[in-house]
Image (cartoon, rainbow, N blue to C red):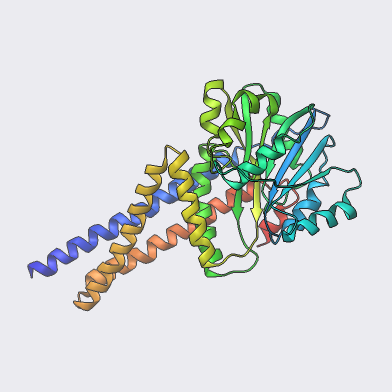
Length: 360
């Protein structure tokens, strides 16, 4: 009858749109893979290019913090110091950083600070960075940022500062690939989110403070200290601050860092909300992100509703069409994820941590 015919038409349209959207994701993933396949290893600083000051803001003990601290002391580039700004002396990380310093810091690179009176006009991390900047040596040439959940390989620092010898480059940045050692619903959701977010972030060369370097002279020219005093996050305002200077942001595929921390569904909910908030505040592409999410989840929800409605009405032809489309779309999305993962593995293949990614 007419109603049955209309239902079949609507389910066919929804199914086609869902599969089409999945194919678009696959095309973008393949484009990303092709772009990354052309990647050649970045220049590496195999000579002294000046003092690099690494800053790490610490609050609590991340699961990989100990390894992060140890690897920061094993950089092949030799002219550097590490400023560790710990939230307070009663923080669980305070004793750990002193333990690592006493056991492994044979070259006396660690400078350990307790954060003093955080500013009320900015985020805690920005407060710690501003305090750290006031502690740097006058001959410091590079500002390097790293997050507590990043484990740097031995060439990490040398790869970060080498591209800065090009005066047209203002920032060198990497990004993060999330792939936990143990599976859980929260970890799986964050991994999928991260894979989707990595592609546009890498293509657009958005700065990421987890692995980040600038010349100190450009930090001053861009007036970042003034900007950070009124910012919630450290990396969000970077692009806009560099525009008047005519400097570019250089994304280094070799500096995609693998994160293996396990997380819960509750954490992912907070994490995604936080990322979307920063995107809304600092990225002009936020509208695209929202539209993409609405279309993707809207089509998925419409397919599920159409499938259940077809079953309830015993419209087996419609149920077959939309059910098959659901399976096809989810399969294509899975393929897209592994295409992106393969691209990441290709980019970091030459580094020490790649065997971990390749073997999982």
